[in-house]
Amino acid sequence: MKKHIISKTCWCLYFLCFLPLCKAQITSVRIDSISIEALFDTLSNRTNIAIAYDVNAIAHDSLVNVNITNKHALHIVQEVLKHHKVEISFLNGQIIIGEKEAPEIQKKSLVITGTVYDAQDHQPLPLVNIAVAGKPLGSITNSQGQYEFKLPPSYTGEELTFSFLGYNSHTLTIPGNDSLIEVHMHPTSIRLAEVEVSYKDPNIIIDKVRSHQSLNYFDEQTLLEGFFRETIQQDGHYVQVSEAIVHILKPGYMRPANLERVKFIKGRKKNDLQQMNFVDFKLEGGPFQFSRIDIARYQDFYPDDNQLYKYVYDGMAVLNDELVYKIRFRPINDNGDLLYSGILYVHTQHFTLLRSEFQLTRKALKSSGKTLIRKTSGKIKVKPLQATYFIDYRSLNTKWIVNRVRGEVVIKINDKRQRINSVFTAVSELLISDCEINKQYKFKPSERYKSNYVLSDQITETDQEFWKDYNIIRPDEALESVFKK
Image (cartoon, rainbow, N blue to C red; front, top):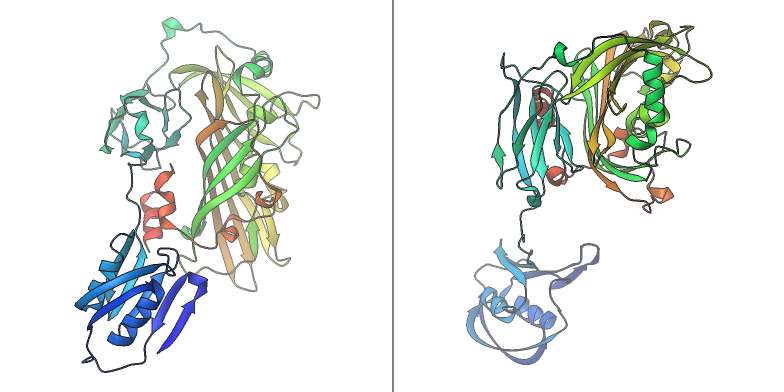
């Protein structure tokens, strides 16, 4: 008999030379003060049954007294280890002993799934905000109106709120069990009798947004838990999908000179979903850049000494059951620099920025290739076609935190050598699912997600069970089928 100890996996495995199966597997053992390891040797020698065990599960050098007559080797092992917390199995002529897994004490989360519809035309509503009133947890519906929200059991009885621009918010009580709930939201409109219809100076509104900064946002460091998804399509077909959980350290809003830090936790990816035409380029973006898209903190598009933008008052709208001013902006001089046009949604009472939608101007797109693309062969022609972005905020304890950031970049690539003329669409989404006010927390330098990291390169392996305790943006059917391949 040869004995092998496989130290790398902490298993000791005894291998026996092949012998006829007719050799007896029934034996008797009458020995005082024998170590468990020596006992296994004895049983293996007498019965030709290999015994494998986890050295962390049992004290193999402890002494036992054995007095068992005419029993199968498996029954002898079971009797000797009956007071040990181990699992013993007999498979393919081998006894396997492993540590018994502790039973789950309680369920870790409640899961509420469903679809959100327009109550009038019964069409699904995409990108509806979902949040627990007064709590840091949040999520959204996907493009087909579907959602999956995971909550601690202690949140039973709290209010779960669904909100969307142009609709009355919908609130339900969180049930005590996993539930499938359809939500029907009713469109709303501004009642003119309750609103003073008059022109508002957009510059005064923006000035008030700046002066209310300390009242509306946290000046303490916050630790955010975010879900990040990045997809790339070539000519309408998915060629890369990456998803990750990240932690973001966001300094106080009164300290814009202090920058966000990102820590990659774990992720999954799917590459080469169809035969991808090879093109040597990488798009800018990823969790690092998206963690720093925060207009309220860095006061992007606000008036400054340079006065880059012109503002136009565009009336009012209803957002999350609150009246908001709509302020449109565009460059005063669209000279080809990286300038944007878009719209700001500002709370009419608190002067909080609740949402912004913006895009690179046409002239800016022409000169944005080096900014949007990190790496490319010199012989490839690149033409950016579109770069649009979105950010919104949600309330937490009378303050506001980042809720979601989304970006979509469309680029045309022409490579005559490879005979490639393709349009690539990259969509990145960052959803903040949890928030903690934590003044002391720090990331080690070795843990920080660097600016030159590409998300798909950081994901080396995938643990599918990793997602079970996190809130994520539920994949659309197309993405769901991608991951099932």
